[in-house]
Length: 235
Image (cartoon, rainbow, N blue to C red; front, side, top):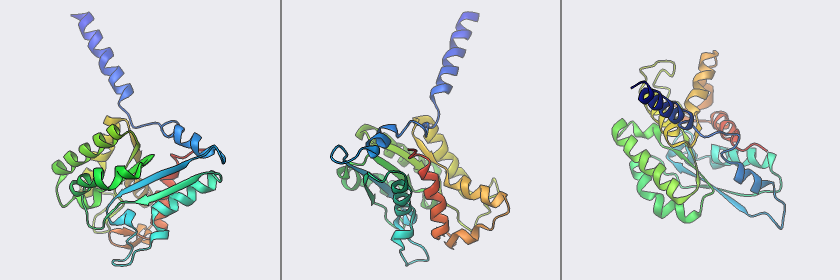
């Protein structure tokens, strides 16, 4: 009996060691190595952002500020570190969309683009479908992306000023935790945008200064997310 318990304990401990979010020092290492290559040995790297209005670049609706949204700000962050790299930043996001609809578009809209890295950001709008349906859709997207073979990084939501980001009962808290749990379970990348904004608030910063409207960041807010994404692309 004691030996059986010890074996089970070892298995559980080994599972915990494996079940974690991907290591941002190594997860994108193959991509980082490609981006260090110079012509004529380099190739084009495709980075795709799949999600809703925020990665689409909506600021104060209906204004779309594409160049100041985090996908293009991420490109700037990457190019500052990798001057020889050829990088395509592609958005397949649609304003107002939630994860169920996003999952249905992966095969038709995302995978034909041959992403090297895929970012997914849907949590803000997933409040419209509930946690159970959102979890099912996110799991499908994760599994499909892993089968396709690209690197995958999940994003927790940016804020909604109608909620108290410091409250444990704020609706977005559950969605942020769901995404953390999925990144942990599937051992993929995580960009915790929600925690980045929460930390600002905890430190006394007025996060409304980072927002174009109640649920869309301005350029300062998008830069905060881009800087978090940039931590995955270490030269």
